[in-house]
Image (cartoon, rainbow, N blue to C red; front, side):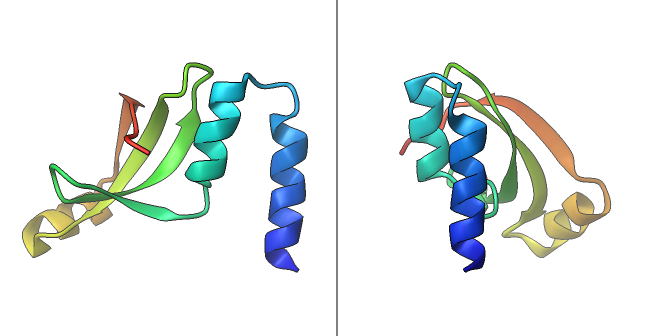
Length: 84
């Protein structure tokens, strides 16, 4: 039921957006946690751009020392293009 409510909300929110934005949002929903492969950073989607790029909030890492740093001071990264 919760997933259905989220998808209904997402459909309403995306109704006026370009097709590329819809594709990115449906393939990378905002409630999931993602890992950036080259760096090992853990992130969540912060915002979506109309050109298909996203902004992410980095809030974790594979390495314990960096994980603590990102948890104490999360970083926003803009203009990330996802390979999906």
